[in-house]
Length: 400
Image (cartoon, rainbow, N blue to C red; front, side):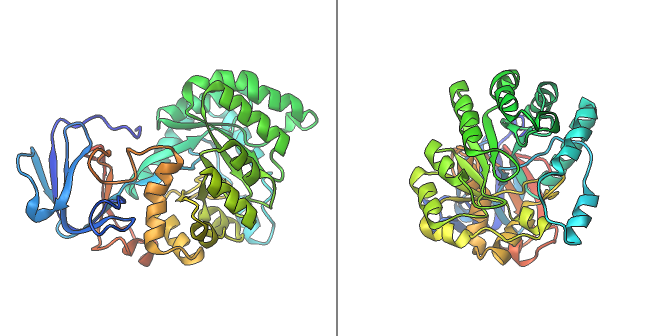
């Protein structure tokens, strides 16, 4: 069940598209969404997009033809921040939080204990179940992180299972310091940067670190990022979620690909992210599920920062698998327009993963898309909670 579906043996004409969102400004109306009406697209035998344009001008000669009967088609959602591989659940913690107890991050230890005790088969089955939910809601690409093992053996297991789900597999040994190292944080950082990183290296594309209250300090964060850079992997960060801190400054200093959460930023932080080319990945389901203040998406967008959206699917602070729900939150709670939110959930998230082959529907991109049971992309935010995704396609093959 990886992002990379096997290449189809046949080409397909998708026609009867009432509204086609390409997320390529060189297409259609020239907006960031690159919208075409009464459109069609052709998938090639290698799973890429071969052609987009007016349905009246669609080329012939494809092996198959699918008429979507006036529905809207959008790029498949790119969920660029998830924690899919874990065991157990924390509904009691959620209920307590809703009764007024603040989120402190301490609940991660509960998931760590359950995950360490689970078998590979149990971990794999849970992750695949959550991934199937994502596919059904139009997600075609995911990133997933480790971080619920916090010791070499279990972190390696999580990374091995995650790599079977996606190429964008992230090592997050620096999630929090586990209880057994509470009195020797330096030893745990050395473990993460040394034996744990070495054991996980062959499964990872990314390294991540949580720089925030209750997680890792500025110096510890820099040590983890330096170790990742020396290992030749790409860098991303959790930061500025629980309070204002040095996360954004360090993200700019290391020019990481993405700083995720970004709930507490100053104007200088925002300028620094923009100037360093760091994508701000916002995770509004976490604020929704913790009853916390939302990030200031408007300030980021108005300053010219590239914004991405993702679910942050995890058992403690955002047990959410639906990108359409995240888009609706972004529009209703963070003052993003429907167009901005859709772009952030597709092309913006692809940019946070340093990928140009996904998040758009134009020639050369992977033919990953969602067919909406609606005439326009506006219905994603307009009808939150509705099952709007009629079909999901990955690499030119229908998977839902």
